[in-house]
Image 1 (spheres, protein in one colour):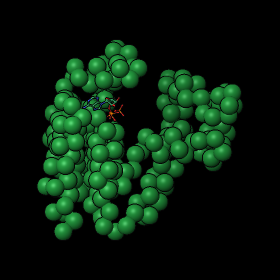
Image 2: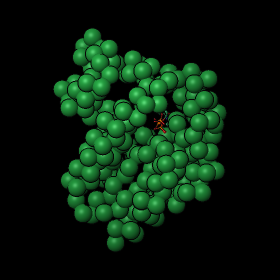
Image 3: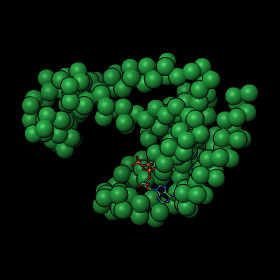
Image 4: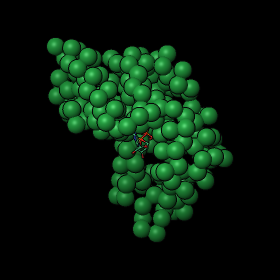
Length: 198
Ligand code: ATP
């Protein structure tokens, strides 16, 4: 099994690269997606959150009301820690299941937004960093519905591209077209994934 840690700043194109790698046969473990799945209606995760924070964090349809929960934990570090103590073990457990279910010669891609910030680079065979020009990222985030101010603030709170590059084995540049990105992913696959699989 080849374990690839995929990271990059918000709006750099991590999910897009993960999708391109999946098309080439990689098994993608997306921590954000798993974090949503483990609190879907009917899950023990959602029940634990309601136990901890009350019914006010539920939307009318019984799903998790994320803005309501965010407003509870935003200003209360102890509440944030309680939430993390519920969600993180569930995400870890699900990730371990997915990894165990993958075949021994699988190429596993973990999409980890804060890989560098949380010092996880050493846990992967390869660290793949996606970057794009600041203006390009801002434009893409705004197009996706984030306000420019919010996008700026989120970018400022993360590691810099330079810090990410220092931890990277390979850097992909996503300032251009999707076609140009796909070519880089192909090259990455040929030069780094295929040789490692023997
Ligand atoms: P986040 O950190 O918010 O999860 P991300 O790093 O996973 O973001 P993506 O979701 O892959 O980034 O890309 C951000 C947005 O930019 C998406 O709407 C995506 O469709 C778009 N996008 C990504 N790459 C390109 C590209 N080369 N050309 C045009 N649009 C792109």
